[in-house]
Image (cartoon, rainbow, N blue to C red; front, side, top):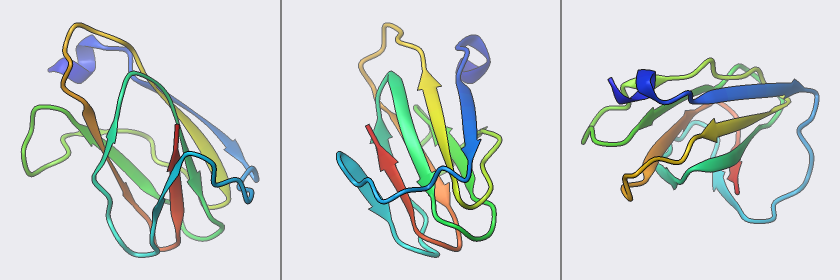
Length: 104
């Protein structure tokens, strides 16, 4: 599996949700997302509330088979996707009861 070959990682900071919205896509409360993300760092900001789930796909069509640890509400998670030779973007799904933001 591609995700096992690449060292995709996350680091979460609790209590770090703030008002910054620069270069962000807003994920409305209760809505799932399908956001293109590239290699490097992506910031996932989760508003206070219940835990959120994050998962990824790259070559899958209708599912997100690469889970991550997700994050609690009122947190900021930095997702790191290493660069490789494929030009195809990863797709990120964020599922949360509250609003979230995905920022580059």
